[in-house]
Image 1 (cartoon, rainbow, N blue to C red):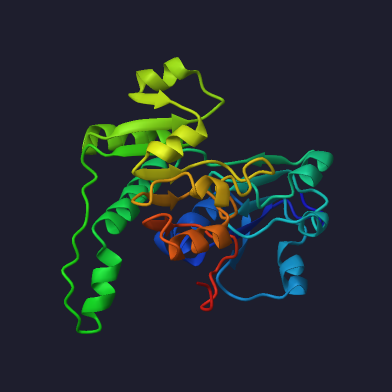
Image 2 (image 1 turned 60 degrees about the horizontal axis):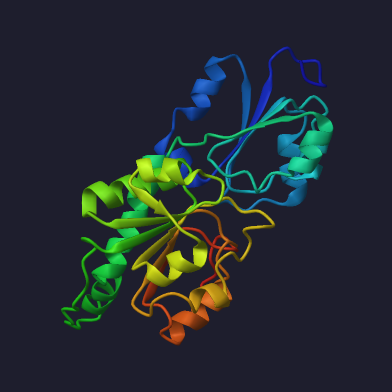
Length: 280
């Protein structure tokens, strides 16, 4: 029962438009459980005042990419659960949720294969210069750029969680890649059994032809990849990030790209989203 005396639980759902478009029955499924749903589509502008009113007196928050703040939680005295529609939770004020005794859950591993496949789509696009070729053809310019193969190259995986393991598996089995892994929280024996080799970060960066980042954003991982680390990479190497914006120092990356310190980068996430049209 919420604070307004309704027996029907209220669920505040905040989703990126594309997630909602591909899962149109998501809200209906919650309503079938006997709940009322207040839906926010995150790509649409909303004032802070309207947002706080929309999530007011909720029993459950379903969160996606946008922050869930202390102020939002304070509007709902009976809030018991924040269910994150994804694996990351850095957008949640965990400290305040813990103080309130609010349970926070994630959908860890739910999209592991999809994200791993996206990692390789970015690697392939970089290796074969697909984006460059496409943009030039649209300008009536025929370049026929020469790319490189992923086959038997060295792949560095930073973070071997559920997604990282899928990236290792595809790289090893699909492209016969030699896979180096940096994950200080795993036993090297476990990594070996998966077909990878546990190494330190410096060695991974220096030896890898492709580097794929899959770690959560925290105080320890913010700018995990910055100028010092980029300078250790091969000038022919490619970097992809499918974890969280902020793990790669974007200013340092742009500088490294302009100075040809690395061959290319593919980012699925950014420090500020959506990305400004003025962004380099």
